[in-house]
Length: 454
Image (cartoon, rainbow, N blue to C red; front, side):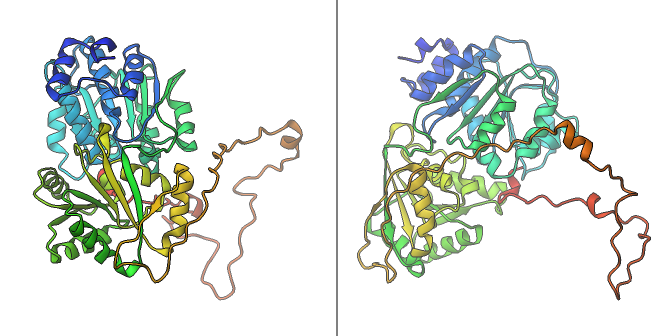
């Protein structure tokens, strides 16, 4: 089936033709008709299968048929977890809508807010945003949602992992109740399904691959190696195979910086991209990597979301991720849109438990290949594949019965027993003025790794 048979307009078909896309991917075949019908959609697909076009194309067509956007208003909103992914989605939307009169814009943290406020004054048909910056703009009356028709949560699993659930719920309270909701994600955990209950209504559920599966176009293998020899092994793999344009994953930001310095010393031009880098540095490093000006890009999991490089050939896991689902996202940077790719993991004995969890999640054993001259002193054993974990059931609270209500002893602040001061302490029954009681003190929220992605 062609894109024309899906009912897309001539303007969109022209843009697709200019981009060289002729045949829709499975996720696009399933999602585009449902979105065009105005249905809510809950879609799961592997990274790199074209899910961005799966929601952007039909959204643009629906928006083109609607009213003109008003000042400071937004007609469609796409929420993403990272700056890079937000920029990538907006780039696609701008390209696909190039032959229409629709406007697109992207906003995220890490850059000055005033230019973004100015660009929103005339209104935007399709806005792509990270949650924190969107709330900042709304608090300054720079954006309104009374004209909103469509909401998209892209990479919803990562947004939950990064601690954006509170921001998402705040945003949902600001939006009109009557709207179309689209939830797209590479993986679907129990937490995502729980969020979907409050978001989508009678959705069309789309899944074009087994949950948490890796793309069949990616050749995967493990190189067992001692932890102390990982850097030398990485350099050897790149040089021995004459690999260029290699995306390397590091578990930490400081580890990424150290790795770049060591690669440069070995004559391999590299750059790092992570949450501590300024937005300008991240954008510059990514562009140099895309233009093949640097050989290796070292990234953390958070910053790598949104890296979309056509036919990226190689991904190397210098460290295995702490979260098994991140392995699926990492290797999904290669083998995209049907192209082939290679994913190599340097695994030391201390990462055995992480490897077991990855294989348990994907339900596939990963081949072990020794690297000549790097046989580990502490061998990595091959462990039998474990059965998949059962999904967690959401917590439910039992309603109180009449008898239990009757047996409750009412309490008040005045009737609560006062804690006696410890002997020798200077505590008295009176608190200094302005001192907050313990139960009123603000709790610090844990910050996500890439707090600049707000």
